[in-house]
Length: 168
Image 1: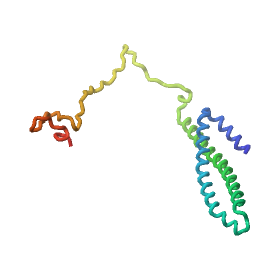
Image 2: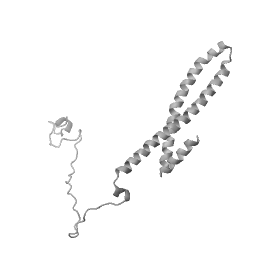
Image 3: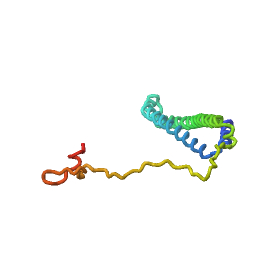
């Protein structure tokens, strides 16, 4: 247990962002509890169906159920602790490796905080021209029940709906 605490404090020193560590801890704990609790509930159901056989062995099924369920719960707590520690250090190992790979991928100048810039144009105060954007004319979209824009008329003189004239 002492080694786990020592390894945790060493890992904590490597990360400046304590909020990230807390988010990882929370997600690992919730994941471990979720999966192991489901398994525990299934085991409790199996215990409930099989506890009646203790009566054949001249034992009180209720007492045996309480004893077995308590032992199963203690094993659940130990399994949660083990899974949390194992998963947390596994996730953090990958996070550290990723961060080291990112740092190695950066150039020496980037790590020093130096940024190279190209030569600036000094010929007058010319502002870089913005590319011209095509003008968008506002075209009204014709609805299906609107009169057709071609001007078609019914025999009685009323306009034809777009859906009957050009609409599909």
